Every structure is written in structure tokens, then in C-alpha cells.
Length: 587
Image (cartoon, rainbow, N blue to C red; front, side, top):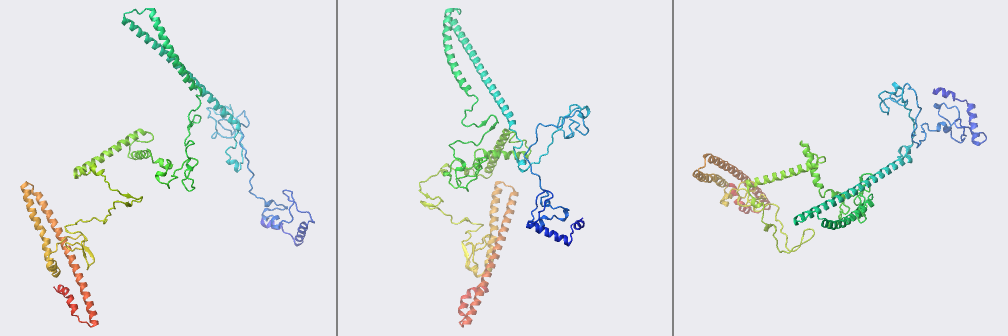
């Protein structure tokens, strides 16, 4: 195809020369310009060749600029809407392929919107429905997004007429109710008046019978009745007048709302919320800083506190909508909801929205049971370990007061008056550990650079206390010290045995069982073994420390002798100084 098009468009040298001369003449204005074959318009002779010449694959033989137009150009859309109230042709005979239910040809039985008939139009051929008027609209961008496209204002007149009829009927019903209520009130007044008159006549008759007079004396009866009737008419007339005035005030403007702010719309049955009066300051005017709390104008809510940079006493009543959520009963309501969820997970039939009363009652029972259980546990602990006297301290201690004048600053510092008592250390002081008679840190070993106990010179905090005897002899003779330590370590079991014998004697005297004595004896033996093991461990550590000190002293002596030999000084002074250490080492 391409080769054929190229062969058709091939021109010889003379033809190309003539074509070029013709183009130059058209550009100079001496020859007539080309005409577009598609539109019939003149083609500008000054256009470049790549614009006027069509591509070879279009097979365009006549001069035209049609190839410059967009091939995918869409037709402009409209804002028209579907026509209303139009029907197609009305048929008198069922046509093959039409809807089997209604007989229309624009849809089938599956998509038919008519009521399903017992006998379709295909079978009886009666009551055939006309065809729908199908219209295909090509809407533009605005037509697709126009909410009021196709709206007819005349249709809204029906809505207005309907609402006017409803309002007229409501007024008529309300007026009838008021009239019926007024008639009922009149009947009740008449009945009350008749009953009152009857009671007065009865009391008058009983009074006459008690006085012994005849009940049929017309003069007295008439006079009394007349007087009573006068008083009754006066009182009744007054009450009737007041009731009529009240009724007139009620029926004067019964359809108008007398409230200051109409919080409910009777037509729409919706409640208006988030209303405020003129005296209230708007939320967005509390803080005019643009970086303050965000105000949502649609919901009229400001969740954060607009004055959070101020102090509590300087803030107003409004502190943000989130503050209201955590105030009042909102927290209890949240706890109730969580309790309902947890109870439902464990199989309880509870719902905080469907049955709020039941959920609240179950939550109250649960809290009471939890409180009772906690009280029982506390009572059991007090019964087992004691300490009830510390639960209720005396009121004198709780409400103790003094006359010492002290001035404090805002950050808690004392400006004037009593000085604050600072803690000496964060650790507990004056507490003896194990069987030591002195506290940890009461002695410092200058040679090893460690802290220890003054009672036994132990540098391990968890070491067992081994009392020192003849301290000087211990340093001179470590073997003797070890023997004395062993005697000291082996001494507590003897004391334990004597004490155990005394205790066993007391127990036997008191009539305790032998099994208890054996248990106590085994316990004492185990304690004695543990103490002996701790003592041996402490002795070994002490011997190791002493050997380390002697070795360090010997090294220092050797270094001193070398220095004196180099200087030519006699070595007698060094030997004299180091003689106690050497003797202790030889020993």
C-alpha cells in the first residue's frame, strides 16, 4: 500500500520544477492560491510544506488541511435533560419481541418496571403499554455535575400546596381540641355546681331534722335556697370569668411559639442545637491568635482550649469542647460502656444502649461486690498480720497545727522562716546487716582502697562477721588468727546446743512433742553449717587480701633498694624500715 502511494505521488523533474514555480508565484501573489477541497476555503500560500502536505498513509490526493484537525475531537455537550411525560407509539396488537408482561417494545420482561400480571400481554393482548421515550443525552462537564439540571420550578407548587393543606388541617384539629376542652370544662363546672348545691341541701335537711323542725317548710327552704343560690352565682360567675380569660389568652395565639429561642421545628421534626444568645462571646473571639485552637465553623466546635497559655484562675468558663467530654457523668458513662463490652465478651446478655437500666444496675452491683471483696481481703490481712492500730491514726496527728511562720515562693523555695530539712543520703542509715556490730562503710582499707566493717575489717558487704581478737597478734601471726577464727566459728553451735537444751527442757516441761524438738535441732544444725561456711569464706578472702598487701610491700622495698644502690647510699635504713614487714613475712 505504501509503495503504491509513493508510486502515485512520484513526479518527474519537469513536473517538480513547474510545481515549485507555481508555489513561488502563489507566494508572490501573481497566481491564485489553492482552495481546500473539504471546506472550500483558501489555503495560505505562505504555509510551510510540512503543514500543507498530508502524510502518505492518508491517501489524500486533493489539497486540503483536513489532516491538521483533531481526529478524536468530541462533540460539545449540552445541558439538556430528559423529556418528561412523553410516550411512544400506542399499540393495539402484541408485537413479537416485545415485553411479555406489558407489551412495550423498548424493554424485555426481565427489565420491566410494571407490576407482574397474572396473565401477560403476550397471552391476552390487552392493555398494552406504550413504548418509553428513550433519549440519549451527551452531557458536558457542567451538565453532569449540575445538581439542579432538569429541575422545574412549577413542580414545587405542589409541595407548597400540600404543606398549606397540612397546616390548615393542623390548625383546624387544634382549634377543635381547644373547643372540646372548653366544653368539657363547662360540663365539669356545671356538675360541680350541682353537686355542691345538693350537698348544701343535704346539710340543711340534716340540720332541720336535728332541730326538730319539719323538712317541708317552704318559707325557710326558699329563703335559704335563695341566699345560697346568690352566693353560688357570685362565686361561679367569678370563677367563670377567670376561666374565660385564661382560655382566651391560650386561644389567642395558640399556633405561635412563646419561647425566647425556637429550639424545635414542628414541620421538620428536628431539634436546633448549638444556639447561643447575644450576651455570649463567640468561641473564635476568645483568642484572636491565628495559631490558637482551631474553630470549625460548620459544627461550631472548638475542641482545644483557646486560653491554655493562661493560668487556671485567669481562664473563663469555656475551656474547649474536649474538656466538657471529661466532665460530669461522661467518665462514668464511658466506664459503663466498657463494662458492658467486657461483660458481653464473657457471655453476659447485656447492652448499654438497648437496656441501659439493666446495664447500670449490673454495673452498680459489680462495683459493690468489688468493694466488698477488697474490704474482705484487707480484713483478712489485718487478722493475719495485725496492724489495725495504724489504719486509723489519731485525729490529733492528722490535724496537727503549729504557729511557725514560713514564707514559700511559687517554686516551693523557703523565703523566710523554717529551713527545710534535707535528707543526708538516699540510702538507709544506721542499719546493721547480718551479725555485724558496725555499719557498712565504718572502716576504710587504705591499702586496698575499699570500704568495709569496723568490727571485723571485712571489705565484702555480704561477708559474715568474724570478731577480731588480739588485733596486733593477728597481723603478726596469720596462722594463729586462722585457728582462733575457727574456734570462734565453731563456738556458736555449742551455744546453740546449750540454748536448744534449755529450750528443749522448757518444751519438755511444757509438754511439747519430740517431733518439734527434732525439727528445731535440724534447723539449728543447718544454721550452724551456713555460718561456718560464711566464716571460712571470709577468712579465705582476708588471707588473700593480706598476701596481696605483703606482695605489694615487698615490691616497693625492692624498688627502693635499687634506687639507694644507684645513689651509693647505705641500705641499713631500708632494712630497718622494712624489718617488721619482713619478720611478719618470714613468720
